[in-house]
Image 1 (cartoon, rainbow, N blue to C red):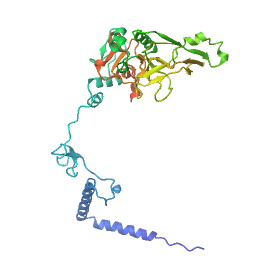
Image 2 (cartoon, rainbow, N blue to C red):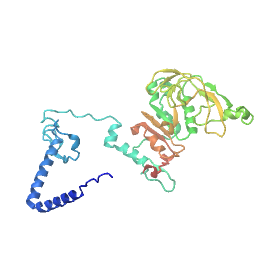
Image 3 (cartoon, rainbow, N blue to C red):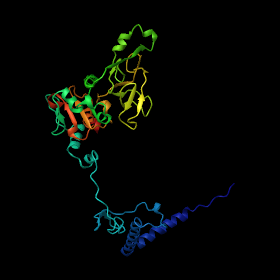
Image 4 (cartoon, rainbow, N blue to C red):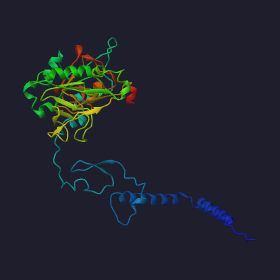
Length: 367
């Protein structure tokens, strides 16, 4: 039978009793004052340790250091300082002088200081602009943009003298017209392209069903008539100098979906890191995925891009932007997205019936 192990339960009880009796006997005002003085001295030492580095101090153990608040003003540089901060940390007693910062460029200045256009854009995006109860439309804020009376005037404002300037890649890459639907975008693109001199070249696709057994149900004429979103048209009509946009990634990051190019087959990139480089665009097979059946279209993966949809314009920064609201926006935040492509009211041109339009904002989505 193993020997019984002695326990120290009795010793623990006696020690605890003695400690409590000692605390009751020595808990006098004089002793408490002495302890508080020592505690305050220790706190001051810890606070100073936050500003005066000492290699012998284990700073990892000083997790509860109170350095106070910023309320001391430096008499030299007017910087706010902590109460126990070592003198001269901010400007070395006035010997270090910083030059006055220049005004930040736009749009950073607008974001920092909140000029009129930035406040108006925030109100537009948050749905704070009053809506007419009868029509469901909003009126644009004062000095928000420049209005045009027709679609033709909108084109002229955004692309003035395009018949002369279309070869200037810097000029044409800084401007765009946006619309809500593909139908309006196609109409704008054809109208703008017609102003460019030169021969209109037509490139027709080769369309076929992926399943040979379905060829009887979907004849070629029917496939040619389909104009699916995100897919090039069957009859791609362009001129030398036309602006096109990539619909597929061919050679990332140079030839990507969304890259705007100049011309067809042999093209010049006009925006991005590879601006100015010439590229060759081949015909590729494209199979749309949002149809109840599958068909294959062999075509150049591009579309005209003098104008584009609002959704496609997200992330684009422009110098001049036109918005065709002949058909109003139909989804959340579209009006804010299209209005924020430029930073100046003088560079934003809007064509809307009676200068009013819809502003779709789901406020629950913003919370």
